[in-house]
Image 1 (cartoon, rainbow, N blue to C red):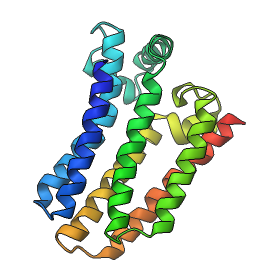
Image 2 (cartoon, rainbow, N blue to C red):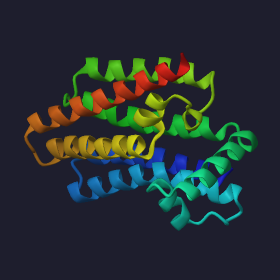
Image 3 (cartoon, rainbow, N blue to C red):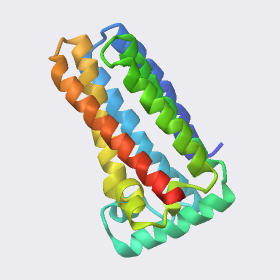
Length: 209
């Protein structure tokens, strides 16, 4: 199993652990720290895949600079990703499956705790199910061609933004249940996350057409 796939499995397991920690009202700082680790692993598994494909020649420093806008390194990163899509065809789908599993674990947990309306969780599941099916028939999001789809979905800003919003929303909802933070802010962050998810879904559908 590739290192990137191991990282995907680890973050799914961590998400399950976090869910039970929230239910048990475990230490809030530890919960937020683990959520941050899960979000970080979502980005780090991409580096692991690229490092393995390049046999260690593409360092973490190069990966970080490619994400921050270095055009030369970004172009090299794209070439490596294209090789990965040919040599490890299941890799991109494993990454998406890990993303969805982690996200669903959090949505289910917060819906069970009555912190998130059931309709919201349903909308997210429906969005992911149909959009993933459409995009899965075309290939991975890293190969998006249209400017709108790249800007909203596959750009560094788009990817980084969704991870930041996920961290804020899931962390805050955890604090609502564990410590008793005001739920109103949790509703606002949840609404922002859902809007972001739907916008990215629209970008994927636009790309597919």
